[in-house]
Image (cartoon, rainbow, N blue to C red):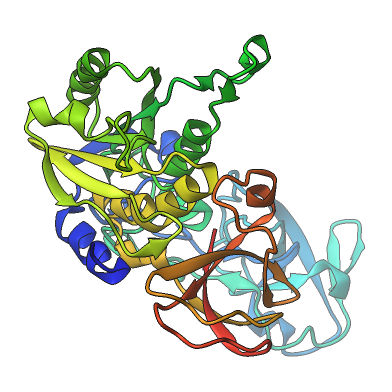
Length: 395
């Protein structure tokens, strides 16, 4: 049995990008850039107005009041094509090109209009309200580096670069196998007195997709080794990562690893000294990865957050630290000393403090929905008093 930190280092060593693909900008949100985004145009493409007002020559404002003849109108996407002469101005709107000859915009609040005349009675201030060509970025400039997650802000920059398609890291394909004779599809458990709704695969799929994977299948397995082997074969052919929930302990019905052994399963680690989630394991079947999670819902989701999330981050070209962004938070109430297994307590954020939930059972599902933090308590650590800072991870 290895420590949590040792498990993470083993994950780091194997979590390498799976290749690249080109996707349309409209489909790129949430993906990771495999190549930098380089601007194809200047931004702005010409000098443009930052305000609604009148484009004028600075020298015409030396003596005030002044009346300037309005000779045209400039709008965004339809600029005025002429050149402003002395004593002239152009009505202009935000984002519109500043006409040749003008070097400032007088905002409309500082202008009184009478017919075709713009009357400026007082000094309009030092701000020229002109965004100069290329002041945001110039053609040929790198706007986004390789490895950048395409969040909302990055997507705006990519679109502004006038790029229609982006090279991104390929999404890992995952297939989730849920083991156990007791499991039933949600909505059908009431048909059998001994049935339990299979809930874990839905949570694991949601988490995996949040971290950049594409779920290509969810299969519920009976405890039949021959049938399980056939499903395992198909899953490893179709997916990059196979996630198995349940069947990872030591009972005679715990067949999670056994169904992959005929495929040449090579274990990377088989147990981790954490609570909950000690039975978590990771292996390789040829070039495919297989991760086994406990069957209890809380244990499965905690280990998925701690192990599967960084694995997927690495496979999509992100640093695994993005999935393990620990932060310091004060603890609401005290925690007892920790035993030999590092413990990850389910907690919730309350007014910038971590409140550990009272119900920590590994099968809890209602309490699981209330948790938005994991609080880390190191193995053999002493009791932690309320108010002390702890390491916390968004859950």
